[in-house]
Length: 201
Image 1 (spheres, helix red, strand yellow):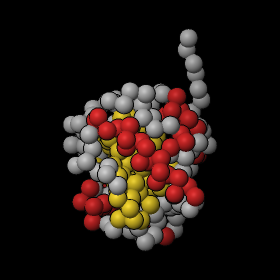
Image 2 (cartoon, helix red, strand yellow):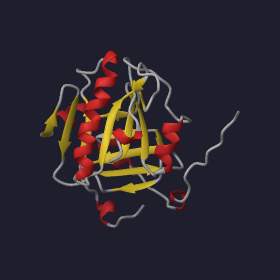
Image 3 (spheres, rainbow, N blue to C red):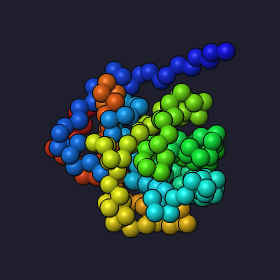
Image 4 (tube, helix red, strand yellow):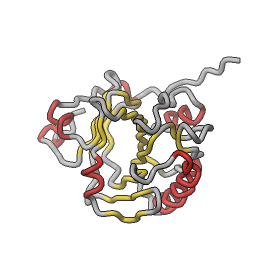
């Protein structure tokens, strides 16, 4: 049986402009992003610590995420979730086996492809379709390519909480996430440019 599920439409009518300056100075950039638009509602980032990550610990990581998610959801603070492999994977060796209830407060998600997990992006799964249907931006970062997530920058930020596998940081103001849906390009910046003052997307 073939099940067809519609992708979200609506944001495509807005043209998003990403400058070269924004691309070069971003703490995260990707050329494989789903979504379209501009998000300035997140100042919290929860990420799996690269040095602590182990494939055999993905279930334990999901449980830690569930607890942090509950706290952020209660505080009404949407957050960026960053980790390796497929989010919501049924195979815990390919990513973090979270369910929607474990991440229900998330505002955007990054899945990392690196030497530890080289799983194909999770586009097409039921979990993935549910995420995109809710308008949650989904970004794939292939480390070792032109994509990047600036770990040094993230580690330099003060932690609100740190667990065995996770680190939760809170910025003093919201960062800017922009996705050009036509080019599947995404940047995240933690400082403003003159073009941003005009909110020209």
